[in-house]
Length: 165
View 1: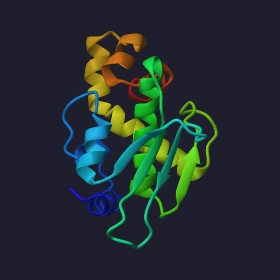
View 2 (view 1 turned 120 degrees about the horizontal axis):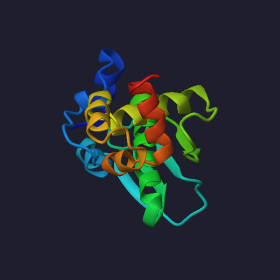
View 3 (view 1 turned 135 degrees about the vertical axis):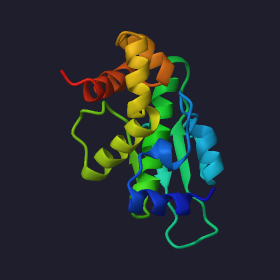
């Protein structure tokens, strides 16, 4: 796999991320996906808010790097979201450095952050998987959050999209 190839495929064919990458299991293993794409992921005990992503400009030998804040315990779900969000920037946007805090999906974000958030949402919680698991678990947000490995606020948002009232 090559991140640049998938970036072009995603931008031109507009397939949902899980189909583009051939993912069939939940929770999606974002670290393994990044590894397969040749994207470096590192943890830092630094001043970054939640995550930072560097996308190389035209140097084909330089690979994208995602730096995530070192977290423990319940924060692991947020780390997965931060990696998926950063992966969205890599796949969707022009090369530059992004540094941000991952906040609730419904918060006001710049257009690029909004797009990267939607990418992460689709990657971590594909609609058909949310539908099947939502029915199986009777819409229990806490259990679904654990199944998909995402914060409850993101699971709630996704359930509202898949099962509109």
